[in-house]
Image 1 (cartoon, rainbow, N blue to C red):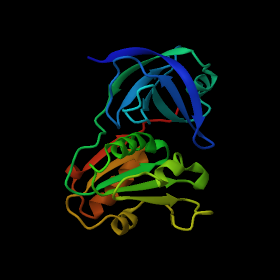
Image 2: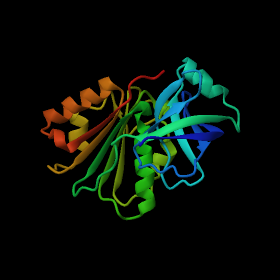
Image 3: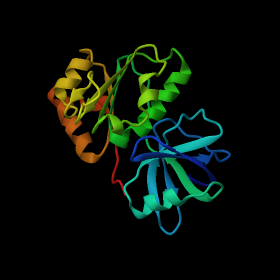
Image 4: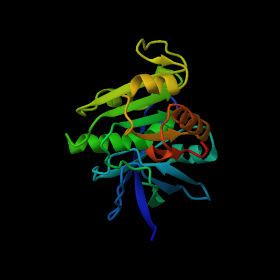
Length: 231
């Protein structure tokens, strides 16, 4: 049965010029798995599904990271005062890490990094229990990379981060353009048992699925999380 919780706003943290994390007091009894999302109800019919961007082991708070678009929902988020209470319902979703023998390939577009960040920080805390992990992360430019410092310094035993930017100014080691089959083929070891997790807007997710099909990745090796709207 889906549970609903009242929670108290704690703080906001700017991640980029357009992405902001909102932290709320973790309600008693709320358990979630890295990669899941919740329905965040700000009142006045302003309800939006938001992925949990923090590690499930964080006992004091839950965090949702949102791309700020100027919508009524975003305006309401911006207006939250410390101590104000809202409702959250869930968690929901199956976009979660499953142990596999092959490499784990995480592919994120923009704010689609949020559930993947939760997964990666969760794996980092497990220390030594993860195999090869490759994160391919697409953004517009260097200023658009949410959680950049954290992702570039994760303490995982066999972890590799690949940046793909539309504008590579200021980052010599990034691919220019969009994530495609060529980039995936170059960065992922030739292995029939790699497991792929894709998170981002619908157009991006569908493009990546087609790219993977073109290099003979089977559908049962792919898990997706589609961000349906940025309001």
